[in-house]
Length: 395
Ligand SMILES: *Cc1c(COP(=O)(O)O)cnc(C)c1O
Image (tube, rainbow, N blue to C red; front, top):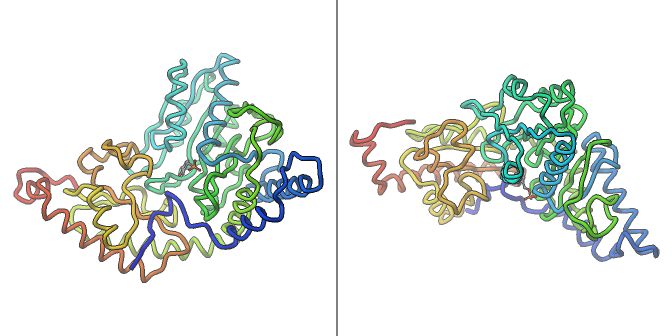
């Protein structure tokens, strides 16, 4: 059996989105900036998509900027708020220890430019405390950036509360909602955010396309210069087929959201219950406040990479930590942030589902993981030391 359980890394494009991609490529191929009728018809679709994406988020169409994806949207939001803050002498940014690298690496860059970056910790369940955010925000703060939901452990952050706090203190608030849009109800006014990033390929749209919501009046500077596209804020001929496909995928994702989330959650809970019987393992992230499709575990005495390779042999596509961290030997910063020690963090497995997965797959998957964990442990020197008492179990 083949089981694709890596939907947090990327999803298969849904057929309706693919249809929109093909149809737009072939029938609306004009450049939206051209004055002729082909161009103007393309422009009409572009603005229609903008209005439809805005409607899903509770935003005004003029607040939506199409980008090349979530990373670009995160970069543009953070760098814009930082630049604007610096002009006012405010150079403090508050974020969290569990952000995606699109946020963390941008903050690293700003740190080198003299910004003070405060990364809020999370508790053992992977959730930021609102009180910590409140304590960190002061009059020097030019941005607060807290993700809506985490990509590795699926935990849902208290963004509405943090948004309210930022409004009260008049500090711009950005949320990386890439894992949330299409999977959770997302409303920019409920969130009280000034910036929000989303990405097409995390909700069965194409990759290489996303959007930045930027509240009217919030500062926005270009990352890409060269043309007047996106009201002068993002140069480059718009990838209209991708934008149209993303829009269709987004509408379909939110249309059936409560039902889909319930179905996917049933799969998730079945897998969590099934894997919990493996000795010396632990679920990463809060059991309840997590994305409907996220399962993340640490298994003691195994290497995550070995698990992945043997699972792949059994037809299961999974991940350990984030797609960006795998391939490097550093354990996931998210797992370290929830208090997993290095050895334990190395034995992590992330399984992420969506509506294309089935219960039959889950039954196969649970057995496959049990088999593979035993196998990897059987030739692990660490596991032998744990069993003989040379080392103490942590989990
Ligand atoms: C995937 C992801 C991104 C990056 O989005 P791209 O469209 O791949 O650039 C950013 N943040 C989170 C939380 C993600 O899961």
